[in-house]
Length: 286
Ligand code: PMP
Image 1 (cartoon, rainbow, N blue to C red):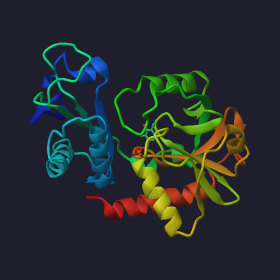
Image 2 (image 1 turned 135 degrees about the vertical axis):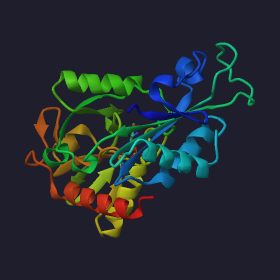
Image 3 (image 1 turned 30 degrees about the horizontal axis):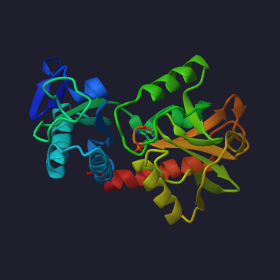
């Protein structure tokens, strides 16, 4: 059975789905996206992803293709039609296809393009990587200056993942003006003196939906949190390091640029946060 995807109002087998060659997502990376995880057939943190999508659209003067209730209905329909138990729903909105290639935005009458598809990931929450942790390298952050907008221009993060792969690591942390901004597709944290540290929100990083939930849960569990930038040296000397994202939840980092973090094994703070996050997320899933 082929995967059923959603394109501008239609549910179609993936082979039949089409988008114009003049679509601005294709020509200019003029599009935004969201990835929502699915556990036990239910959506995790849907409201957070919907709110961030609206913010990304507003920042780019892009029209919202459908109301948020309809977006939720489309997510649920795709999860059902593709029998997703654990996995992801990818959503992309672009400024649509203008009549020709032109840098200037087309008139507001041009309909935005809305595409959604699912990815099945059985056992997503029981990833073996969470038990052993991941290795990261540091690279320069060479992305544009509006990383708070979740655009589809992901070429530099792709290059970062390839640099990590070439170095025998799993991912890369990006560094700007001496401090870590974030991972290629996740937010970065260290633990020092039992305190959780992560860079504060600004245009320098994506405002992670998992980040917001994890920091709220950490504070509720009386864990100390400090939102401030940190360096690679500090991270290598930290007790623990970890990353968060919708697809990996809380993932321990056990090596940075070849140096072990702590004793080189996942630490108790990351493990506890992962457990709390998964438990609370499953309870609140819709
Ligand atoms: N930073 C970047 C650069 C990302 O691409 C992502 C994941 N899309 C995140 C952080 C984590 O965000 P979220 O928790 O909303 O998945």
